[in-house]
Image (cartoon, rainbow, N blue to C red; front, top):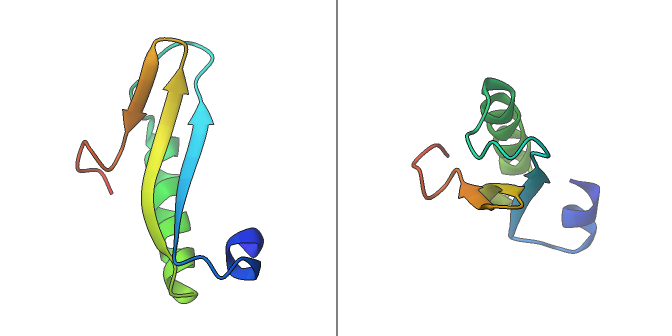
Length: 67
C-alpha cells in the first residue's frame, strides 16, 4: 500500500502465482482480496483486480465477479 500511496495511485492490481498450476482462487485469496480492498479504500485507492498466474494462464477475480 505504501508504494501506491507514494505514487499517488488511484488504483492497484494484486497479482500472485500458484506454482501448483491451480487457477482457482482459494478462500485465503478471497480473504486477502477483501482486506486489501478495504484498506485501499481508506486511501481512496481502488483495487481493480486480483490476478492468479500459473504457467497455463491466469485467473482474474474481477472477471469472475469476485471483487
